[in-house]
Amino acid sequence: LNTPEFSIEAWVKVTGDCEFTGQCNQHFVASRDTWWEGYMLYFTHNLTTDLTGWHFSLGQFDPGGGKSWAGVSFNTSQTQLDVEGQWHHLLGTYDGTTARFFFNGSEVGSRVQTFAANVDNSFSIGRNSDQDPRYPLTGAVDEVAYYNYALSADRVSAHYDAGVGNADPNDEDLDGVPTVAPCDLDPLHES
Image 1: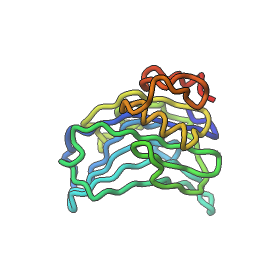
Image 2: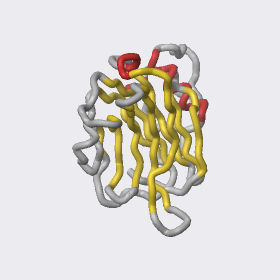
Image 3: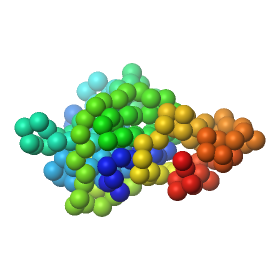
């Protein structure tokens, strides 16, 4: 699940914190290896400021030939207690040139960058795929979907609306399929 263009989507919920000092990272979905390759959707809690953030990170090739993590972050003014127990919709896209991150149906940022695909570790749900114990998940993940293309902003919004019940089941969706709950969306049928 590391195509040159892709979208990764999940509904996520944080239900607790980790005990590491400095910053707690909780990975919901990851296809990454130790050498800055792949991608991940994750949550951070800064234990010093108590502020939280949501992230779509990708491994990238640096101009000097190395690799590093880059992507899009959405830092909030919310504390850990503000977000605990609530479901959030995260969706990251990469179109071969630009990474875009959507939070609860709205684009919160984009970044032009390269993508270094993960070729060593498996795709993981509910933990980091390189099994680093510093990144535990205290929460839940649901409705994970992978697409081998970048979803449009309209499509992302439709997925979010369907998930929270704001969609009219009688309206036709963007691809001619009636808008329904996310569990009924067929990623292979999307256009």
